[in-house]
Image 1: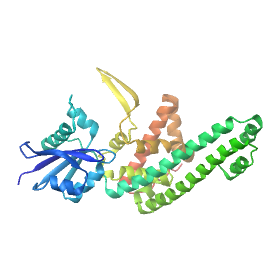
Image 2 (image 1 turned 180 degrees about the vertical axis):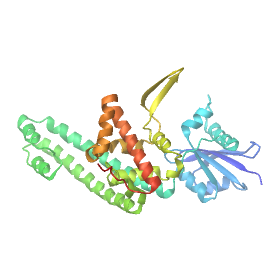
Image 3 (image 1 turned 45 degrees about the vertical axis):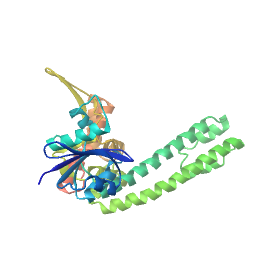
Length: 340
């Protein structure tokens, strides 16, 4: 039976699809609404089909439909596809043809195809991060508003170490603010408490994920990783087997320096911009609590800080934490601090 190759240039409402036969001839090309019935109609009569779609915010909705139809589907790396097949003229039709052609010739740069369950877990974690980000913005807005008040109000606020504790909230509610200012502060506090409720709800969902994920429970034994960061790292890694060695995990997280070589000279610059930004953020976020919790990690950081500066030491420590996680998951064991 002849193999058929389908390139899909995906958009939110529709996709442009190009169907090539084994010889590379176009069997069919056209715009199709992102509906299962429409896709089935377009591919009617096709047997032994392989499909490719570029990774994107909503492309997995099409991946799920293709998988349900029993079609072997590859998810392509958009930046690498662009590098391989540069084109001065860019249209949906050309893009879908380019994808189908690269798939047929075996030149598709693949990305890891995540399971539905993994993507659902990602959405839980992203939602929590969204709420925390909004709450931080509300906190900053409230601090800015209070900094614009009279001297008496400012000095009263400055006496409180943390405004967002029970003690701090009592002080905020007792401030003798002008009526209009009090209304603004009250609105911000209501928004803050609303977001706090939403964060607590998602925390419960994160805890459920944690209980179901042995890898997250192992990661949580590493200094610096609480439940949220442990689940986040476990979800982003998903399958450790896709990393041949620890350097591949470092590159995936984007915690390796960029390198410029010419002749006999090599220069290492800032960390690469590519990589999984969530995994990179989690590793870097864990550095400060890890330094406070573990003497060995603190010594590692201090030694590098003297030689290379604080920023380089922080990134190197994040890389060290990922190395520890890689080895633990590989050996299926918790973190054991070095005994003196």
